[in-house]
Structures are given as structure tokens and as C-alpha cells.
Image: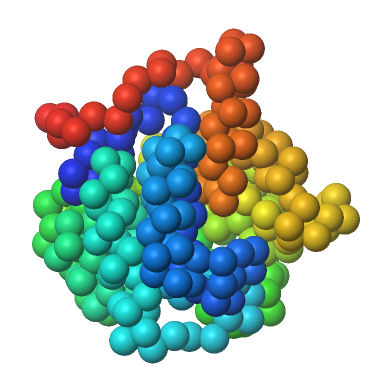
Length: 288
């Protein structure tokens, strides 16, 4: 299994670590730390040096209660950082739901569009279909970031998330986006209670049965705080444990803030014989 992106074919025979670059003043865990363009560029450099397989750059916070950003401000925040990240030799993802931001990022040569709204915006699917190899990540979220935690009623969260992701995967396939370009994300913490998040982890095989690679983002999430009683800045151990548990259950990509610690934990996990996937490098040559 692999993930086809604009410049790279990402071999998913071993788990991949996606490093988070929040160019925001208000993200839930590191808001403001990398808001300055130079600081964000330096953070990209550091994450790659620490072993990040991919970078995910976002300019608009999607934390619970977040207020929407203007198009102009989002572009101003991310484009200079994306331009630098594209020189670092790893796939670059842009975390956005705006079609105009997607277009600007793709015009720069970005590898992946990571959309918390799963390309439901007007023209989003068509835009990605017009780019022959760009990767996409389709995430499940109910409502909007500012209100999503008010919409947490499910009869069976795993079934409903699975059915949503299946529908979105079928929609992009019908538009001509090859399955190898698509990764699915159940949206841990997006319109879900802690119990829902744990149910998704415990029944991850039901999502894997859709036949697409899975990306999970547990890093520093409030569910980990609810379990451990730790503040957001003290959730490193819990975040690593959640990442390893996700990988053990079949996740192909983990999206994390703490790249070095996660990479070290994965090295130990593999050395102990727990990792069954081959240790192969990301290929620059698209496979046929």
C-alpha cells in the first residue's frame, strides 16, 4: 500500500510520521509558537531533521470553538512557509478547506491537501481531480470547528464515521481521483466525545475494511487529558502511547507535534519485533 502525492510515492509498508506546523496564534496546543514566518520555517527544518516523513502546514485553527479566518489572512500565513517546506525533500501537506487556498498551494507544487471537511466545499473535488497526482486526506467532522462539540450524538459512532468516509471516498473516486491518492482520517476529537474516540480506536479494523490507508491524529488531544488529568503541555507520554496503539491497530500515518519522540518510540517498537512492515524509504518515482 502506498500514497501517491504530487512529487512522491509514499511507501506505507511502514508507519509514517507527519509533523504538524501550525502557523496560527490560536491552535489548541502550540498556538503562537510558530506564528512568525521565520519561526515556522525553522520549525519545518527541525521536524525534518527529527525524522518527519511528511509535513502538514495549516494557517487556520480547527480547535473546538475556533473562529473562521479570512482567505487573505490564511494565504498570507501559509504560502511563504509552504514555499520553504517544498525545498526540504519530504512530502508537504496543506491543512485547509478553502478551495482558493488549495489552488494556490497546488500551484506551488504542494503534495497533499488535508481537508477536515473531506472536500465537501464547492469545487474542491473538481480542483483535486484536475491535478493528476496530488494526494488527499479526507477527514470526518460534524458541523464546524466552532460548534462541532455541540454535535456529538451518534447511535454508533464507528458505523457513522465509516459510512461517511466510504461516501467521501466514493465521491472522489467518481471524480477521477485514483484510490492510491486517497487517505482517510476518522477525525479524533472532531465532534466526538472521549468515549467516541476510544471506540474508533478499539474498532479501527472496521475503518481499515474500507480498503484505504488511515491517518490518525491523537497528538495532545483533550481526550488524552481527560484520561490522564494532564494539561495540554504535559501529554507527551500519552500522545506517544496513542500513536503506537493506533499503529499497532493498523494506522498508516500518525500526525504529531512531537516528531523526535514519536520517531524514537517507533524505532523501539520495530526493534522489538512489533512492526511487521518493511523499512523502506519514501520513493520519488511514482509507481505504475
